[in-house]
Length: 230
Image 1 (tube, helix red, strand yellow):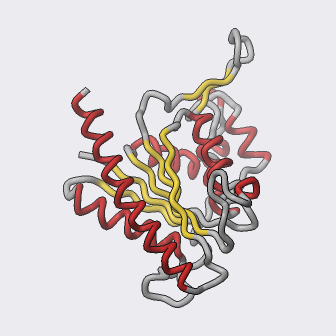
Image 2 (image 1 turned 90 degrees about the horizontal axis):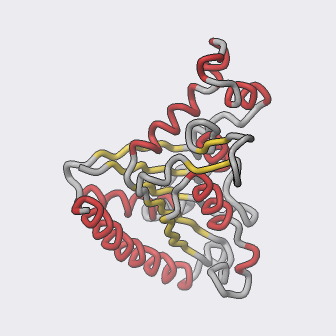
Image 3 (image 1 turned 135 degrees about the vertical axis):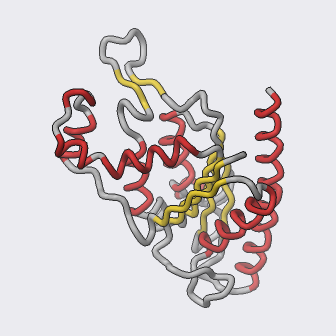
């Protein structure tokens, strides 16, 4: 049995497959999850809509609590970290994470950044010891063989690796950096482009992205089978 964690972070509430102003990333993630359920009927899907219900932003109290050893925390500290604990528990339970993450002003939505800030946490997903030889930080999820899929959308085009404005795309780069820090290094990206053009190029990009999702699903299934056999 496998567990899939499904995240959506678009501010748009609808799905562009059936709503004129719906989200392309919600469309892609729904497509991914539908195919996943068909291939893994006995699996578990955990869903969290951080676009509609953003996690709390990191505060001074959150930082104070996170950097206090668990056995020394006061009750208010446990309360401050409760949502973060839930998000991390969901992440740890998942074999595969699929996240709809549209590009907003060249980076991830604030809602998704709040999610990242809550799961990159000392003592839970990365370790820290100032007396440790070499690097004082190390990942704690690097033995879990998790895969992370970023399903994005972009108003313009040419943000892909090696393309004309790739240097302006900080969605995949920032997310991959944060995930690698906690030990998730198998990261894949699929994106719809031409959203602001709204013409046949957008439709072609959606079709291409959905085809890419199908190929990616086959790859992830193969990886899961290999891991189960090893």
